[in-house]
Every structure is written in structure tokens, then in C-alpha cells.
Amino acid sequence: MKKDPAVYIRHINDCTLRIETYVAEGRTAFFNDPKTQDAVIRNLEVIGQAVKDLGTERLNAEQPAIPWTQIAGARNVLAHQYLGVDLNLVWNIVEKNLPSLKAAIHETADRLAIDLPKPSEPD
Image (tube, rainbow, N blue to C red; front, side, top):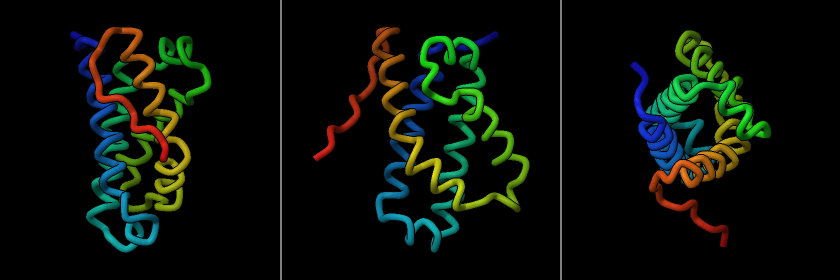
């Protein structure tokens, strides 16, 4: 039995917030700290699983600009190739894709009337 979509939306949002906190000290700190790497990778895995559970077909139809299928697939790569994870790829996902994913999740939450903290505005 599938959970309410709100559960998955909140999981994704929580993970994006955690990742932002974990990488706040920047790229060098990320690459020098295996605990931070593990924490970020774990949260990316949770995001991928939640996207998969929400349904990539549905998400692709609603927000085609977001690579939902790739996000779900990244979970498998991260989970099953844990000894060979490309940290440059992980960093690029965080730096380039996380902001648009976070915005898309907030749009979905608004459409479904799910309360989430609003994304912070750029300075």
C-alpha cells in the first residue's frame, strides 16, 4: 500500500534541507569529510526512493523540466555502487540540480496543499 504523497514530498523536502546544511561549508569541506559525503549520499538515496514511490511518470507529466527518472535511477547507482561513487558527480548533483528539485517539490506541495517551509530567497 502506497503512502500519502505528502509523506514522500516531505521526505524529499527534508532531505534537500539536510543536504544544504551538510554542504554549507563548500566543495572543499565536502571532499575532505567522508561523514559529510556519506550523509549527502544517503539523503540523495532517500530522495531517489521517494521520487520512485511518488511515480516518475506522474512527476514527468506534471513537471517535465525536472529529470525525475534520472533522480530515481541515481538512487540505485548510489546504493549499489557505494564503493565506486563518483564524488564529483555527487557534488554536481547537489550544486546544479538540488535547487531546481527543491523548487519543484515546493510547487508540487503547493498544488497538493501540503505545508512545507518556503525556499529561502537569494540574497
